[in-house]
Every structure is written in structure tokens, then in C-alpha cells.
Image 1 (tube, rainbow, N blue to C red):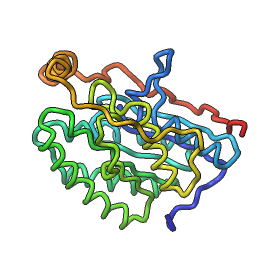
Image 2 (image 1 turned 180 degrees about the vertical axis):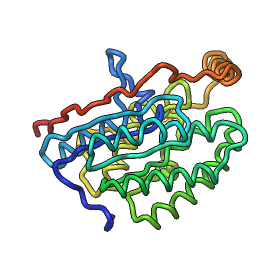
Image 3 (image 1 turned 30 degrees about the vertical axis):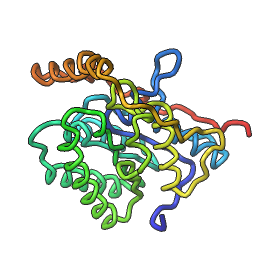
Image 4 (image 1 turned 45 degrees about the vertical axis):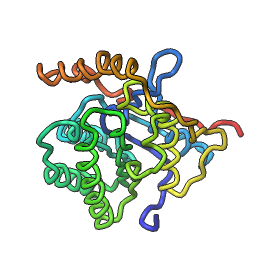
Length: 260
């Protein structure tokens, strides 16, 4: 983007919800990787320099909580690049207030700019092909992405529109809960982000997954029992999957470039 010029040394902070935390992309030891971790590595590999990286994202957070709880702590780290994503959990709930989401998004991005930090906004991928009431959520997402594009244009900031990626709605890019991307899906998002920043993508990244067959009735019933019913239970009791959790990297970690 003509409005974006990467600043060095790179200090990159990510804020958001489970998408940015990396859910669905678990390492063998159970810790989460995810697209933001991959972006940090991609930044290091592309520049040949160690990147400082922090990730304050917490699963289950609504947009208001992301901004109220994570934005100022992120800015206090004095980053050069701050990625923002939120609103996905808001979209899954009835009575979504799109105007409020847009107003708060614009305000957050303006705050980042006022702090002298380069903002990067991400639209999350489209999960609606595999979840209940997907059509309703898709209509909200389509409207939100179109309006957010106007905001990023007005503010002249970098914007990665994963919602409109034609590949990502495919079920082969999603984890077993159908709400979070799997490893290849997260890698594809990181690929999209580096493209937004006009940076090369590591040659060893796998960003295309083989198509998967439609789930069987038995698989759909199991999915409802293991994922949909617990989600409904949390909504009815006012609980969140992120209760009692904090971001995975609240302070800087070093991400060195890999040996080529």
C-alpha cells in the first residue's frame, strides 16, 4: 500500500480475540501458534532482522472488550506496528449493532495513528458455510466488511480483507469446531497480511489445502453435541471461553529470522 512504509526496528503487537490468539492452530505441545505468530516470523524472514512481538488477544472477547482491555496496554509497549481485529464474536450474537462496531473500529484505528503507531486492520475469514445460522451471520459480515473498507480508505491504513478471500470459506481451512481456522487457514491469513505489507512470503509456507467432502449426518450430530451446545450454554449463563485468561505474549518476545 502506498500509505504504508514499514518502520525499523519492527516492534509488532497484535490485539483481538481467538482468531488472533491462534485457536485452531495448536502445536504438538498444545500451545497456540496462529497467523499473528506467523506474521512475526514472516516479518523477520523478509527483513533479515529480529522482530519484537507481543500478542494480547484473548478468545471470546467482544469488540468493546478488545478495545477497552487491550488497546492501551498494547500502545504502552511502544510498537511500530499494531494489528487490530475484532467483531467476530459480536457478529455471532443476535441484535448485532453494526454502527457501534464501525464507530469503535474507527476510533481505535485513529487512536493508534494518534500515538504515532502504524495500524493494520484485519477482517476475519468467513466461517458461515459450516455454522448454524450462517446466512444471517454472512449478511452481517458482508455489510461490515464493505463499511470497514471505507474507513480504512479514509484513514489510509493497511487493511487485509480475509473475509473476501475466495479460498478461506472452504471447510478444508477450518478446525474441527468450524469456527476457528486450522493450520493451513492461519498460514493463508499470514500470507494475506504479508501481501498487504508488500513483503515476500516464506517459500516453505503451505497456503492451499485439498478440498474436503461434506460432513455426514453423524459428523454433524457430533459437531452439534461437542461444539454448538456448549457454546449455547455459555451464552445462556453469561460465561465466555476467555474467562480468566490473558494474552499469550503480554511482553515482548524476540522472533529472529530463520537461516535461509
